[in-house]
Amino acid sequence: MKIRGERECKECGTRWSYYETGSVGCPACGSLHSVGVDDRTEHTDLQVTFDLTAIRNAIDDQPVGDLAERAREECREYVRRRGFVNAGTLRELDDDYLAANELLHVADIVRREIDLEEREELYFLSLLRDADGGGPRSDGGQRPPTAEVPPGLRSARGLAAANAVRDYRRDIRTWAEDRDLTTAERGALETLGEHVTRVRMLDGDVDPRTADRLIEAARDLANGLRGDELAFTRAQDRLEDLEFGADGSGGRFGN
Image 1 (cartoon, rainbow, N blue to C red):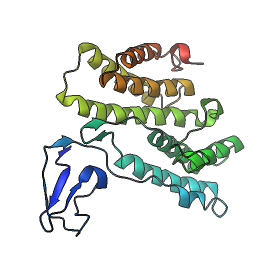
Image 2 (image 1 turned 120 degrees about the vertical axis):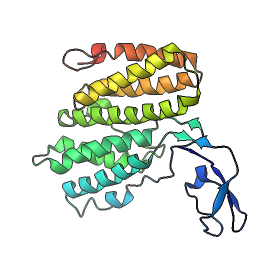
Image 3 (image 1 turned 180 degrees about the vertical axis):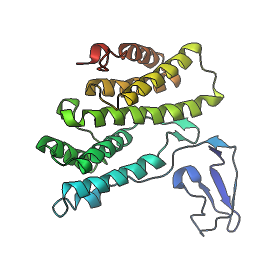
Image 4 (image 1 turned 45 degrees about the vertical axis):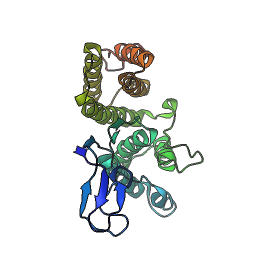
């Protein structure tokens, strides 16, 4: 949506940025009566906090299934409110968003699984620990390495990646509406969308390395559209390499 992000309160005259607060309410007096004082700018990124602390604190008191249900709902709300265009600037496909998507899909499986394997439970708990950056490393959301994905959660990894890239591609297209993309750039965007559709049709059941390469392709493409020619070339190469085999495993990067 295009909004006037710089606001001025009609009651007290305070000026603030909607892009920073995510609210049309005046931060000084609380009034909802304000006017925009700048040009309308594309903006999809709402201010939202991703914090799993309360759920982590209940690990010793609640069954894994209940923890998974709570984590699923927390991640769903976070993902629903997030976007990638901030005041007309295209943001990165960040690790917090990727980790929240994966925890959302892993938690959905865990809450429904009757005979949960130990490695699947440990994988879920690892995501719960690090997805919001609340673990030992504080440099943003973290996902377990590809090699640690249990076979029973492989589809969750793939579907999470495809959905995250789908959402990111949607905002790339929104951001690019007022820009003149080349034929090659438009073609790369379309190819990215085709790969996303393929993974979703397979319910995410692709090699986890393929899922990660889909994310890398999306990130390179975004950087390419922002002017990095080397990144755009990398994106084209990654998209070509992601041609799927008949089993959906992911071209030469599959099993």
